[in-house]
Amino acid sequence: KIYDHLRRENSPKWKGGRYTDSHGYIQVLVNVGPRRECGWERYKKEHVLVMENQLNRKLVKGESIHHIDSNKTNNEITNLFLYTNEQDHKNIHKSLESIGVELLKKGLVYFDRNTMTYNFGNELKNLYKL
Image (tube, rainbow, N blue to C red):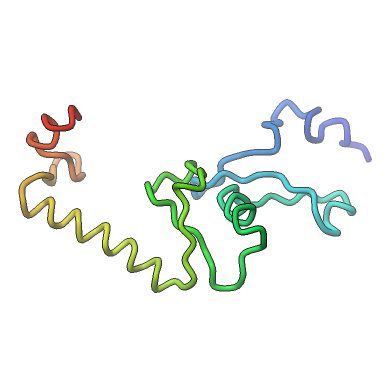
């Protein structure tokens, strides 16, 4: 093919088969299935690969993965939680939001109107050296 010399390792844009997608997830090149045989490349989210490796199976329909620390690039197995339906995932995020509301009520976090962000209050900053 004409552009084979610019593919993968030969391309100046090659990043080792890993990149961060527009949603903040790390995508990893996997060479499986008929697409690879046709010369197509397939990427898969790294946290899915990590969880599938831990489970020793592919995820099944309805299963998905939550990043416990909300960092989509932290794909350590200890940071990943497998849930089996979307309602569980909504409940996980709702519980985190509830904690934030409680911290706000207690004055441990506050809303800054200028930056339009929530921030740690002085008590938490001093206690945890934030």
